[in-house]
Image (cartoon, rainbow, N blue to C red; front, side):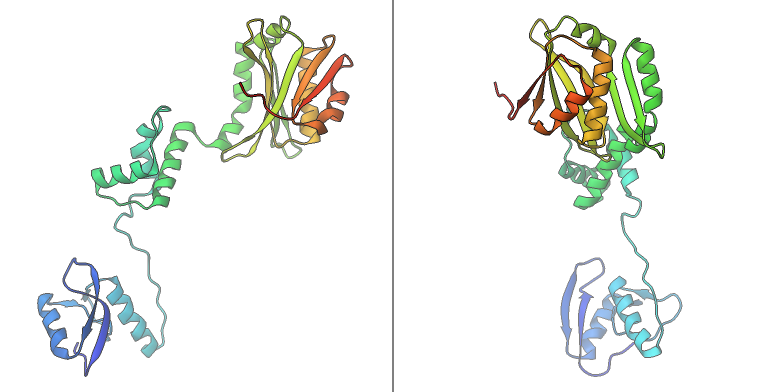
Length: 292
């Protein structure tokens, strides 16, 4: 197809396989020279004669010509997404890099993923593609977090069978969804009898796909080492969750004379603690962490 008169073409090519460049054309002779370099390939984005089995220089030339033609002929068209790395999905790349993500001592960054995929497979991944692939690899190693919560009843059953006389509880919401869980192993319950009646209680956020809060209770053994007593997973630090936690702790470890519970910066929990725990109780609130 010839162009009549002077014209200007943008985003055409110098040659097949080369990068896109801006080239100005003052006459039809310059267009003829490019057509001679790539005979049979349409390089003119203003091309308006469409036939079966035509070959276009690139997607831009084809869509530009179609846009112009659709205005003239009053019709619409849709462009389907195309990619040279269509098969390099997050699941495929994740299965390739899963070996590096499975090692806890290996720091495998997103730049490492991009470098390895380019060096070994010639695939250039974006930052987000590398991030999604790494998340897919972690899911292969750790499993789906939501499905993991569904396996808690089976896990707690095995835990109780392995550590008899432990205090393990699972509390669900009205719609049968996970709400709270509490674990106090028998070894910790038995060891508590030989420790000073001092307990440090704290809570921290759970980072991950499933948000929540981890509540912990610890003490010191006779050797001065930290002895974990109990832990719980709850939805958040609120009156209901803390009250449930202290009730389970009371049922697990019983009452001891002049028991001291140290709260890490949680003055508001004093009322819930007094309502849930035993009468022989000394409360202390620590506003800051101690650094050694």
